[in-house]
Structures are given as C-alpha cells and as structure tokens.
Length: 321
View 1: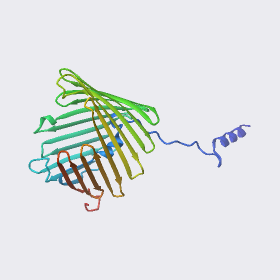
View 2: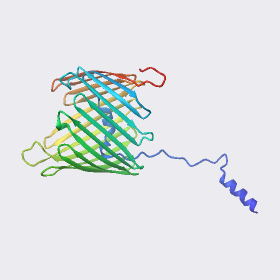
View 3: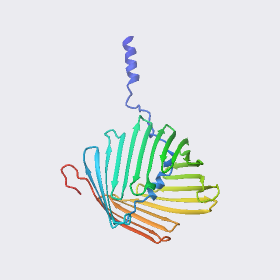
View 4: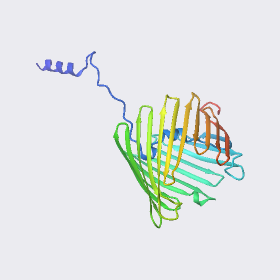
C-alpha cells in the first residue's frame, strides 16, 4: 500500500507530456519618479547642439574606469575660441556605484556620484563649481525610494541659497500615474514652488501633464504665476518617434508649442526640433564616430553649427577607430 501511494504521488508531481506550466506574464515596470514623467519627450526634444569643431576621445584605464577628453575649437563659449575638458568615469562591477568628474580650461569643475542602497533606495550627489563665475556654483544631494507602485524622494540644494524639497508619485492604474513636487527656497521670506502632474502611457502613446505655481520674481509686489505643460509622444516603430509639447503661463497669457522628431538608423540617429519661439535645430550622430548639429534662432538672430569627431576606445588587440 505504501508503494502504491508513493507511485501515485510521483505521478501527480511529475507533469505529463500534455500538461503545461502556468504562463508567466511580462514583468511590470517600476513606477517613475516625478521628474521623469515626460522622459520620452525629453529624450526626443533634448539635443546636444554646439558650435565649431568638437573632438571627443575616450581611453579605457581599467575594466571599470574610463577617461574622456573633449576639445572645442572655434567655439563662442570662451573668448580664446577653444576649450579643453578632461574627466574620468567609474562604474563598479555590480553597477551599484557610479562616479563621474570633469574639469575644463574655462574654469568649470563638476562631479557626480550615484549609489544604489539595497533594492529600492538610490542616493545621488552632484557638485558644479566655476572658478570665474561664482553664480554658477551649485551643489545638491538626493535620496529616492522606488516601491512597487509608488515612489518618493527628498532633495537639498545650494545655489546661492538653500533649497529643500520632496516629491511623491502613485500608480493608480496600470497606465496612469499621478504625482507632485514641492520645493522651498530658504530666503528671508521663504518661497514655495509647487507642481502637480500626471502621466498616461498605453502602447506607443505617452501623455504627460504638469501644472506649476511659483512666485513671480519680475513683479514689484508679491504675486504668483502659474504654468501648464502638456506633452504627447507617439512611437510609431522602433525607429521613428514624433512628439509635441504645449505650454501656457498665467497671468502673462504666454504660450508656446514645440514639435520634435527622432529617427534611428542602424548606425546613426537624426533628431529635429521646431518651436513657435523661432528656433529650429537638428542633430545627426553616426555611431561610428561622426556628428553634425545646427541651431537657428530667428528671433535673436543666433546661428550655431558644429561638427563632431568621436574617437572610440580600442578593443583589446585592435587599433583605435
């Protein structure tokens, strides 16, 4: 009888040829922090534009450390017409620690540190200093927590005055996430800047909305100003993305509309931007090491064109590209 019971147990434990395991659904993506609600629009609209000739060269120092060199020639960013920048980048083997630094002949020094703590916390610290322009000095530290369906963060910053703030987001539906951010500027009379927003994403469509209320620095009497931003991006396929953003401010009654596109080839990427402020820009990057950018501001009469040459670090046993 005991042998019969063991045989039945073995038969029930071992699946037959017709039995199938329970299907495992796709892994749910973690919720986004408030400052990244419109990340798809920013990735498409934010372009790296420069003027003159730019050379970038990277060298692999160790397995986890890399040094980068950047040289600008014929640029208007410095009176001498050229800038040289150097900076190392370090990433630990487990990817939980990242350090990036940069120093340039223009007097700018910057550094950034990112450290993951456990499985849900992330600590970020950055410092930016300029030896010739103290107004550009800025230092900040941020602590973020990412839960299953909610996030929160706290930030402290020094930029001539102390700024402290916090953010919170909550995923209320699989496609809808709500959140807000509150910042306090520590001056003689503390200034409060508040923002609430929403993010909706389903398939290739992404919509983000943000409403901000802050003190009006231009007004001679205490007053507040409000701004509304709405962005929409559609990813038609793995290569083409189109997006637009509309913004409106009250009581100034000023508005603006921006449109951007991004098309990725096998070895290159093309980005373009057009807005109602009179700006037109475009950038082309070849992953093999070449790039071109152009920006025209018809209202201010500003023109900026640049060429990029990126020298890739050589692999072991191969010459540099």
